[in-house]
Image (cartoon, rainbow, N blue to C red; front, side, top):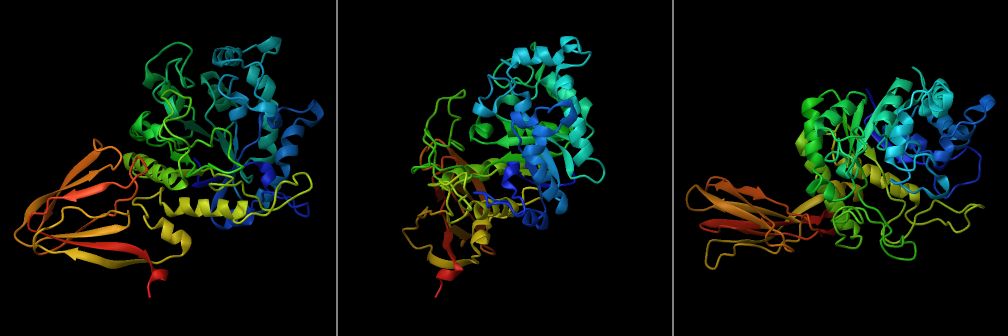
Length: 477
């Protein structure tokens, strides 16, 4: 079982070579070590192809050797992403980096990888292609003292996952995204978990759980919660496979969403529906404030279903809302320049954000934004409503209010209703028992599921109301 809790995803060349020319993106591995982060290294398909028999690790070493050496120096644990060697052509188009040309679709990938005597070699297809390379990699970087701790994949069909289980004793993490949970056991959509014929969903999931050492719940769009029930998936795994660690794999925001660096069609993470997937697209890439609101609500929805995550797998954007970020120029990328913030400053801020959310323990640190900016929260009175007529039954919500309620008559129950400002049919009602002896705080009420501020109303009978507004300490005189 992985002992490392926090993992940062990156391309191996982002780790600078000592004494070499500065790269546009530079990871500070010593900072990762000091702050308890491991690395998920992401080689492409071409980097995972075996070299000649006399140098089996040629392609892999050219991409990762420096990164492994630096991680070894600072004792930073590493996992390797394997998606590109398993995905078939119908699942992803990787341009010049490629995918296996023989995996034309999922059916063909299943057929090839199930063969035990591929092309007369007395070996399976994957064993013939990758077995010696995996043994070389683990012999060099694994073992009791090595930094290589395991592998991560979301792309393996049953036969591929079974081969991976046989070829390594290191930890294997299974990513589960979008429809993968609901489609398990079928050939529909993300039917990677299951045999080639329809079977009961839980039979397929149980078989996969038996050959992996951990699961990541991947949260990238609001559909993952609202439509595809990944919180239900996490809860089922926690109940039925309690020894399997459950991780959170996500990105808090992704850009740029505007400006000359914006991707054609938009960098569409945390849209309300998944573009081009099952449901129709309903919005352009939303502002980072909205993206992060949906990220916070989604990760905490899954966390509430399982108590706490065991692992966090942090992916990050290479940009803010309007531009790509760089640490500096270099001869082979003259278009790059030093930005403010730099790429690495942005990556660190994202890791600090993830840290502040307390996803791997009970409770949530709601002061994440103040902590990031070094601001001390300060509560100041924003006026109070007394029991004389007319008594308001709501207030102007900006997402920064704490509301003190107190019944000035006798102990009684009061209804509180929270309504979406974009869709009045989306509302929640709850009741509070209030008394003259003590006050009760409610709030704050930040952005709702739609990225808008909700409206809060309350039963104002015999009610004293005081609204406290959060302001940054630095603004106080």
